Image 1 (cartoon, rainbow, N blue to C red):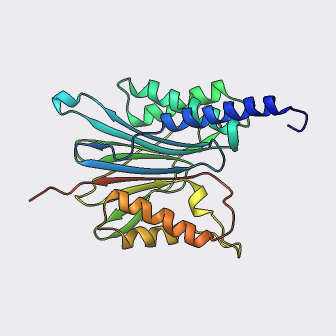
Image 2 (image 1 turned 90 degrees about the vertical axis):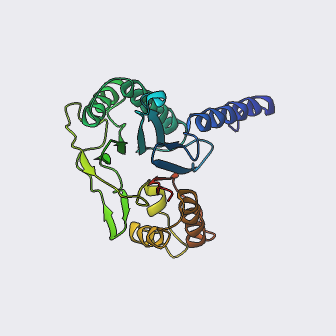
Image 3 (image 1 turned 60 degrees about the horizontal axis):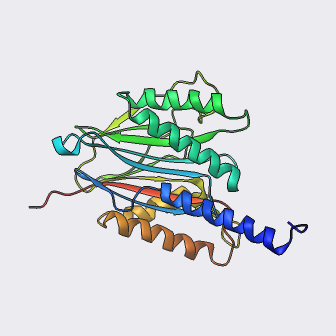
Length: 257
């Protein structure tokens, strides 16, 4: 960059600004509601673009009331422009596969194989994704941070049951089933939240995140998400961020009485 003139630097900045705009246009709409489910996400890249993957897609035919909801949070290895390109590639893979009539396990399995075949050996992505069903929700965790289930009786975590995407093309993935009640939530996040450090070098940690979310159990999805980012900022203080941070709340709405 030191060898570029002012005009060339300006052109590079325009390209980066455009990349930022494109990436944010690919993010799901905030506050998407599908049937009994409401969602809220917060996406904070470390730089102009990020390598975290955040997806919320309504599937099926809304006119027939047969819609379901696909949601995911992932983290591509690396940072910056290279990671953001891989993130957009991963997004395109999932969007293509979701147009087919496949089980969630098969979607993840095929996404892994396609990601392996189209990227280098050092490229991989952790991922957790889910899909709502007529009876609840199914979740697949491929080497990612464990989602937090906020239930009326307490808090549970969904452990990883498979390898990150992009490591081995023949990797297999399992799906777990849950049946959240009205008012219960599933919270997905990237390690840019739980591994945020304060000035003393302490991690924010998933236990603090779980406690905060437990305290906000009765809040709407938007208030939950905002409270996490507020608490994260207070914890970090003046210590600079070191990674992309993504949070996604998927909440089963209460029935009005």
